[in-house]
Each structure stands twice: as C-alpha cells, then as structure tokens.
Picture (cartoon, rainbow, N blue to C red):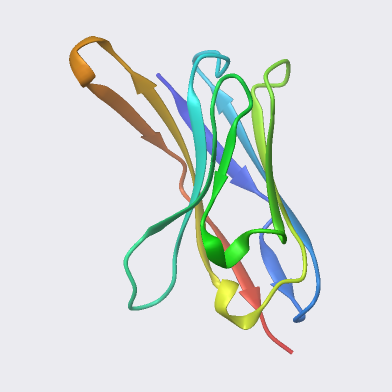
Length: 120
C-alpha cells in the first residue's frame, strides 16, 4: 500500500519561508511523477508544482521564482521549498504521486495534507 506523509507546514509571516516534505512508503518514487497541490478555503484544488522522474519541473505562474520542487529518490522523498511567502499562499498543501500505466491510465496517490498559513 502506497502512503504519502507530508510535514513542514505551519504559520509564517509574509516574506518568510517554509520547506514541505513528503515521504512515500510502499513503493519507490523513482519512476513516478511527483507533485504538490494546494487548496485554499472556498477554492478548487490546484497544482502548484510537479517534477518528473528525470527531474523536469513545472510551476504555476503564481509561484515561479519563489517555490522550488525537488526530489530525493534515495530517501523516497519530495520537497517543496517555499520562499517569499504571501498571504495568498495560505492553503492546505498535499503531495501527489502519479503512476502512469499502459493505455493512458494512471493511479494517483495522495497524502493527508499540511496546512500552510501566511499571516502577520
């Protein structure tokens, strides 16, 4: 059974930094596309950043230049370094692992989420 456990969320002042971690158990992440998503109150969940198995990254425009996603396959862990945080970054951040299969099918695995609150 694949399990994802996030940590590192909390309360931070505007302009501050946080580093989120997502530890995966149950299978190796080396071939998986990993991502961080967030959902703010009253809004739909959105993809924040993704990283492929070969290390290619993608970010939404709102976090480019401020957030960095990375992965350590030896630790089966994905990180999200968040700098210059803004009020609008407040959300529950969730880790996702996507396993693409033949025929265009995939399995998605999710963590329970970690709260990030940016407030003065």
